[in-house]
Length: 421
Ligand SMILES: *[C@@H]1O[C@H](CO)[C@@H](O)[C@H](O)[C@H]1NC(C)=O
Ligand SMILES: *[C@@H]1O[C@H](CO)[C@@H](O)[C@H](O)[C@H]1NC(C)=O
Ligand SMILES: *[C@@H]1O[C@H](CO)[C@@H](O)[C@H](O)[C@H]1NC(C)=O
Ligand SMILES: *[C@@H]1O[C@H](CO)[C@@H](O)[C@H](O)[C@H]1NC(C)=O
Image 1 (cartoon, protein in one colour):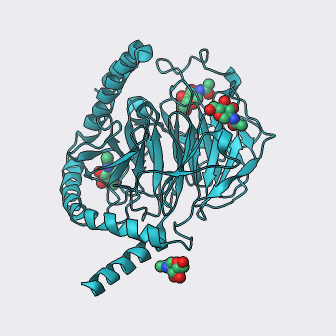
Image 2 (cartoon, rainbow, N blue to C red; image 1 turned 45 degrees about the horizontal axis):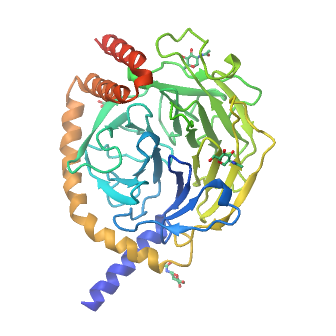
């Protein structure tokens, strides 16, 4: 008995040490959290960051943090975080953290593409529909409708659906995607002009044939990296995107808005017209770690690197969406330890072995499910129309909850449906 246990904990310590990568995220009241160390911690509001008093959050059901491309994604409307790719034994599992109740649950999924989780910026949660979009490099764009999940997992598996192949070649692409105004932008697509990004229009389930050029004095390079959106205080769609390319030439802030009903309209943007599809810059991060991950509140941009060191840039974007380029990255007075490269690994491997036991059987269950589901969805000619309408349907559901967008949202859904017919 004892030798078996010892072997098991050695194996899980090995797994955790090889591949864990930490991440940071905010709750919808803009308290900062850091995840993936020996414990996951709440760091609190930005007023406390110079001498943070951290509190550990629930360990029950937390992710094993063994994935190399884990992503911690805020569902702002639901005050929840969806963790993608954090369990290397089953990348299709999504861990859901409910910030309000400090509790974890695990969402099983079926039909995941075999090459899920290309990078730490491969998945994007669409703000209005709560649908997760993931671009893969051998099976196209996939979506997972999380609208029924809100802040805790549902007991039945959710199905990934193939949407369509991209209009651009993804050969050798390290996917670097994020969202502004219902458009998903792909930065650093090979053979795209510097300063241009490729676009998937969520409400039309449509990859634009050409990349969108961004104006501004500094063009971002055609290089992969990390990308995130900056949420808004009013919980609208985000309009600012942060792109940190792997050459660390700058931190690029790309600003986008389109009138959903008529793309030729340029009035009505929440900022000056010349900021539509523009790029501005702030300083490159101090820690130039390509595997670092990022999170933003409307007020602060935060980075955690693979050492667990945390840096922040205060007020990167002003209320009028211009940037505060004179700022700098500050080191937060706390580092996350016990993750991939820290010495205090005993707690972390104990936690990892606990969840590894639980995940063993469900991992094989969902792998079977995903093989059969993905065969049937790619065999079906109506795959892309079906997935597009399910995205539209969940969009409509969310729009009903968001009275301010009701008329506009229904119009767009109707237009999207007629375009598909
Ligand atoms: C994407 O392209 C591949 C190969 O060209 C094809 O097998 C697959 O069915 C396509 N996927 C979709 C969703 O159209
Ligand atoms: C901004 O980019 C979107 C996406 O490519 C495009 O539809 C829109 O026409 C652009 N707007 C302006 C003012 O450049
Ligand atoms: C801290 O966050 C608050 C909102 O929670 C914001 O008003 C303030 O500007 C932020 N301060 C800094 C220095 O980022
Ligand atoms: C865990 O940390 C200890 C030092 O605290 C170190 O001696 C040991 O090699 C580490 N184990 C692994 C698997 O990294």
